[in-house]
Length: 294
Length: 185
Image (cartoon, rainbow over all chains, first blue to last red; front, side):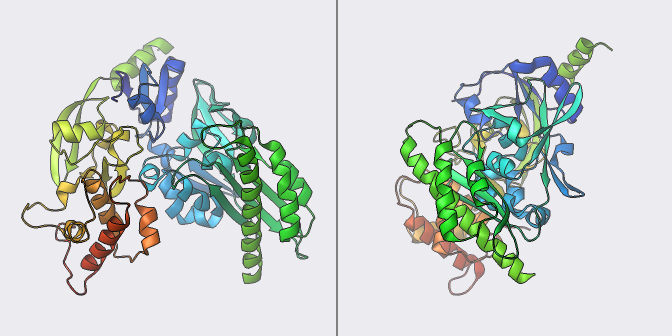
């Protein structure tokens, strides 16, 4: 249970990190927060020639507002999402999601970019990224490019990132003041990965109908998914418990996870409907509070 | 410069099997040569003899290797020792420099029988110190959640929760209060 031998590199600029990634490609791994990679190294399930530690790249640790976009550097620790006022103010869903990422001991080290690049379909941040229509900013030898969250997550632990590229930031549209947001997760134990989880962002019209809504679900397929059928069924409909409960059933059709040691597929379908229903109910409640308070 | 020359330059600039690391551990400056693949947990145990850092699972599940890094709890088996360079690490030894005088948190664990085998206790005591640092009062349910990253296979947790609450009362003042004499300076 000790890491294998590897060449350790700790560049202090993005350019040097990318140059190392370009040189070593599949023979190298990027060490960000280490909360998923270090277990793999300790158990020797990963045996890379080169470990590229990006913790000294201070350029990756910034949170900035750029007009109607909040840009979070890949190296920002997950625990910062819980405490940073800029995040709570501009993209409140992130602060609601963060406490469910592992345990606090993991969030003190784990990074935003690390979780996104790891692309675990049961993880919270990829789910939030899909829900919020986030954009990944990635850098390779040829420069930077952006990838929409919906295109970034491609399969089980698989992203659109090329072997010579690094996630350097995630860009999130600033959430409307009147929108309601919520996150609901069911896991076996505190800190475990989700059996199923749902994030919701809703905007209500003056007459109480859904003006727009966005629902993302984790843990039910190879990637985090948008509950498009649920979104379409509810747009323009009254935001009542009955309409939400009826529409939430649509998510069951998107559950593709097979039976595993954690849950049967049938139970996941049941949970998916439940978390979507609860997340939408909670998001509607916060939207109503916010519009009453304004 | 060609790409391969530049890359070779990168290897010599960054790539290495050993490093000199300088950090503060329990208030003392420490400089050591370490293999870059050495975890912080192994460095603390093997190089500094701080064997209160308990290795249960070595892959980030049990939480018994928890230490405070610049005041925040981390799993020391999921970090390399070189990554702690320039930072402050606290193990449970930092609570009471004098073996005959218990820290209020240690006293509370003893009074409430907040330990049985003791394997998780250093981690639990450090986590208690972290959550009690700003004097906040917690509900039992909140404490249960806050310590959920550390597994205890003996106590069923209730006595640990009682110990954290008892320690909180001691540290905040009131009847039987004691000061956290090791905190700050």
